[in-house]
Length: 71
Length: 132
Image (cartoon, rainbow over all chains, first blue to last red; front, side, top):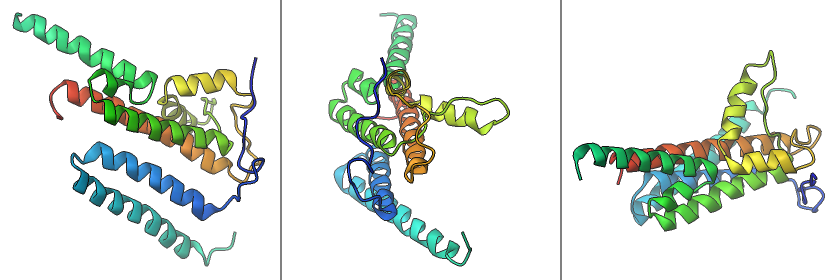
């Protein structure tokens, strides 16, 4: 017996916002690496901020650089 | 205990830990007594995987003539039991290629697998004394 994925973003009526999905991805990845690579709370917070900032700002920078290219 | 016996114990502890880490995210750390970390890893990796399914991502499978699918499959299967169960149970493991969130879903699913592969290496390092 197979089940269908119970909820998809569109079916559930969530707004499909590219920026929100990028924030969610950056949050999950930076939380993971902060816990994996840092040993105490202050260094974890610093590392989380750095990775999260790099992912979000890097994403925005790449998007800005790609803006002149036609789709 | 002789040194040979203690090496054998360390070896079995390592491989049990690494195997458990592959089966479910955080299980290897739980086995090593790092319970809080284990719960954190389980939540983060499982959430990433489930978001991948919700975003209608594809559970990769090798395709002849497409070498990158082998790497993607390796990454995707890193999620262990989550990946295997999803392949067996969900209606469309190939995802919704027409969905606007399809590429995001694929990225989330592969990232969850790669995170779990890193957790396996972390368990290996801990049991070998390379990491506290």
